[in-house]
Image 1 (cartoon, rainbow over the protein chains, first blue to last red):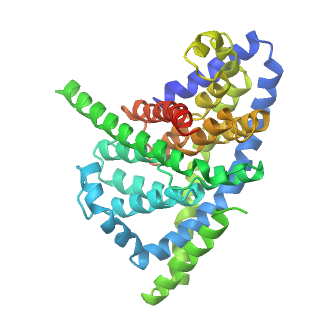
Image 2: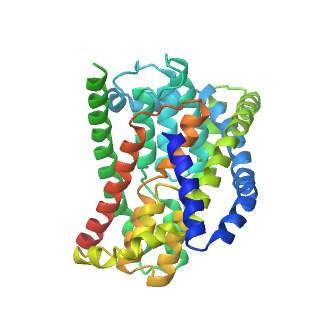
Image 3: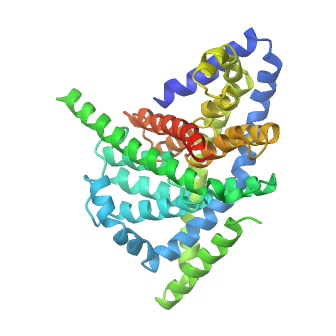
Length: 196
Length: 171
């Protein structure tokens, strides 16, 4: 999938750029994207190392397991394939909790650890498992209790009431997450049917 | 004032105090975890590079904006504000790009306008599908992602519909 998307982004971008006379912009971008990547990396890389360290403290103190335990009834429904003591679940719990607070840089190391745990039990190392997809659906649908960055922007641009969108945003995120989880289940069932 | 300025220190403080209470050797734990994080960061760099390269070329070509201009009259019939469509399209592709689009919309139409509100909800209620999928799958070497993209994009579509709907209900 990534193969096709990635290639089509570049092919469409370059071909369209040439047709529409924006070839110089594309040319600039090819030269500059190395630097853009490094810029992103320089910002996110120390944060990831830092949060991986803090995460290890939380893990050794038993905090992650505690969090996973609290979310267990929910996880049983969402991840029917995982054992309730699965190590991945404590990382998933932490990843989702931190995402809910809108601190995305801090949640990534937890999410990547969760993927590693899920991958260890994966029999086809190049193919996504059902639990992996469900986890990423939860992650991309972005369950956010407080979108801190949006709130900051709304304050910066002098909104009369910056927090007025907290509730509608919450409603939107809950709806999209629930519907996406249903869709995930539907697509899983359909893919099962195709295999049989 | 940023709310997150308040969350993070408290989170760190809480973890540290709890760990000390549980008699964890916090310094050793931190170094051990940070070492792992170092490896993880290095291993995701190629995926980051690939993604930023692909996404930026697509965005710079101007195709996202150009596609929607001819659709404008059609969409207005359904009272969908066309101005938010570039945001709807960039949101699943790139968080940074969509953030810029959102700020442009807020600057242009005002933070408390209908469009400003729709943009804020759209940006806040979902995460970047392509970014998350390529990073997370890439980090463990998964290339066959089955129906993950469909489910992720479906969530983005729902967010788009919900942000239009909620703004018209609440305001």
